[in-house]
Length: 120
Image (cartoon, rainbow, N blue to C red):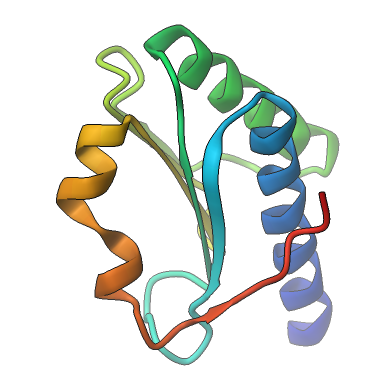
C-alpha cells in the first residue's frame, strides 16, 4: 500500500508540474523529499507571472487533484497571490511570484533533495 501511495503522490506531483507548465509558469521544479522531510514527500515549486495567473494555476491543480480522488488539506496565500501554498499532505505545491521565490529560495533550503525530471 505504501508503494502505491508513493507512486500516486509522485504521479500527482508531476501532473501538477505539467499543469503549471501548461499555464506558462516559469522555473518549475519537483523535489523528492522522501526521507528528508517528515511532513511531505514532494514539493512542486513554480513561479507565476501575475496574481490572476497564479490563482488559475492553483485552481487547475486543485481540479486535477479532485479528478484523482485527492483531498486538499490546506490552502494559503490565495487572495494575495504572492505565494500560494496547496497542501495535499504527500505533495505540497508552492506557486510564487518572482520576488517571494527569490526571497524564500526553497531549492537552496532543500538543496540535497533529488529533482525529478519534468517531461515538457
